[in-house]
Each structure stands twice: as structure tokens, then as C-alpha cells.
Picture 1 (cartoon, rainbow, N blue to C red):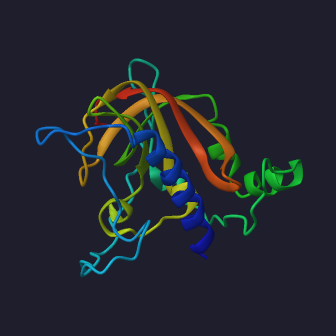
Picture 2 (cartoon, one colour):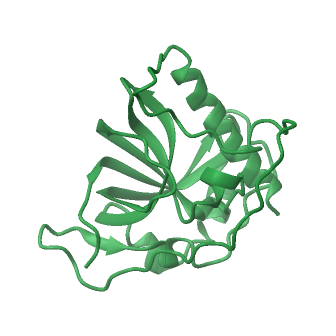
Length: 204
């Protein structure tokens, strides 16, 4: 069921939008991506959705600087059901355990690892024309067509130094991956977060 993934993602984007309301963009600056149909139905004619893009694959080898190449074929390669409940201020321990029980041990072992991962950017926080927080998605379907993936199909990325917002192009980033359930406004918002992120070299 996509409904609760939609609710979680909309809550995340809404809170991010509040942080961006004071930002002024010039004609020369990149603007944050607004997913079609994610926050309002609108009256504009929707573009037909193309076939889903193939997930970015994992690499078995490690980079020379000890960053492990990880792909969404591993991170999003298992069924994931988002809880159908608003947990209020905080979830209880049983709910957290139930959510994380869906994540394979091979993925849980990535918690705390330095990784490099490639995906499609959906900015959620813009500072001085640069994206400092964004979702890294397993396909461009959310960025361009408002098709919400399962919660394990995106990573919340946080950067000290932002990068220009870019859409429709797979981008590699590296940082420390956290595999843990996080809630926003009572709804599960993510199970992956990449901290201290920076642009990375593509997997070879």
C-alpha cells in the first residue's frame, strides 16, 4: 500500500518546505524540485509516466578511501510495508522493532559504515541556492512524476556544504550511512540516512 508512504514523504517535504519559505531564488539559481501531484492534485495535465528505471546496482569492491559502494538493488531490494498508524510524538519500542524486522541483516550491517551510493536527488532544504538536505531516490519517478517509492527506496542525505540541485540525473554521494527507523510528524519518514555527505566518484 502506497498511502502511508505518501503520508510520510509528504510530511517530510512539508516540514522541509517550511524551512525553505524565506529563500529567494534568482533566475540564474537552481530551484528545488517539486514533485508533480505530491502536495496538490492541481489541474495541469499530467505527463505520462515512463517505465521505471532500473535500480542502481551495488559494487562488490571497496573504494581506496574505504567507502563501500552500495546500490539500491540492495537497499530497496526487499518488500517493505510502512506502518499504517500515526504514532504521535514518538513510536513505541515494539513498532520500531516491527519496522526494522523487515530490513535484512545484510542491510542492517551497513549501519555506521562509510558508503558511496548513487541515486536521484529530490531537494528538501535549500540554502543560498545549494541543496544541503535532500532525498536520494532509487529512481526518477518521484522527482518527475510524483510516484512514491517504498520507504526503503530513498535515503535522507545531509551535507555540511551544499551542492547545486540537479534532477533527472543519477548522482553519487558518499558519507556515513545510518540504518534506523525515523519518524516525522507521527509518520515513518525514512529507514536510511546519510550523514556528513559529499559528492563522490561514480562506481567503476
